[in-house]
Image (tube, rainbow, N blue to C red; front, side):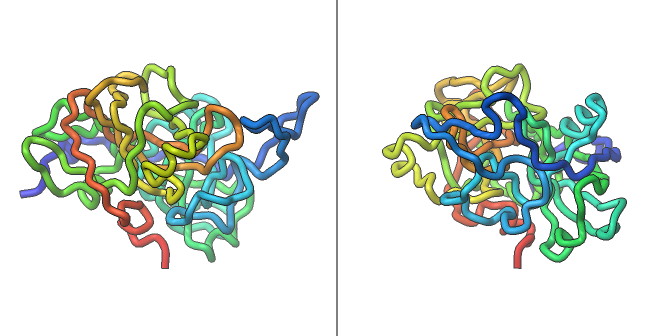
Length: 292
């Protein structure tokens, strides 16, 4: 018998966004951002169609800041975008409903707070047919997901289908969760302070070389499942000894202090009922066969 959930009771609804543009600030200091070392940078950032970065690709070395893989999307109406971000779950099916790529199917891979984008992976050939403003409909399914035998574990933004592909084992009263990497709560930054994790992400800071080496974080890939140790996200993100939170890497590194690869939350347990197990293949691209 598999791990039992309430998947049959969850409501599946349609939400719509459109491909969002790359944006730069227009203030007096634009278009520069200033690195944690005080160096001004002008590089690609959030938004758009990223042709040569998809889930499964390495993060290290990219000349960019908060790069979002494949397609970045949002709804231009603020309230509708709230629904689009909250209800779109990682692993959900997405379909292009306008433009030359109409009918192409993709997979939701995460949400990015602040800019409030939903990231969606599509095949390379489909990306080449898309233009900014093309519309995407997501079959949103997963908000409210619960695990019958683990009421302490909260699921946020996780497709039931992805859950069943990814997590298949319990051990000694804990849910065994394959992850590509672990990171300590001490190096988590931007994204702290919200009262929920049903949208957005928070960032792993990679400025401490010793921590990066100890946890192997220089090998992070877009789409990796990662465990944040001593981190509780039940009602907002914070440090809590013994807690474990698990999420997916949704955007790239940053030059700016307090920022880094973003983690969209998927699972959290305040009492440590999650047992993360290192698996180099714990990436949504590998799990769902999204790359050749």
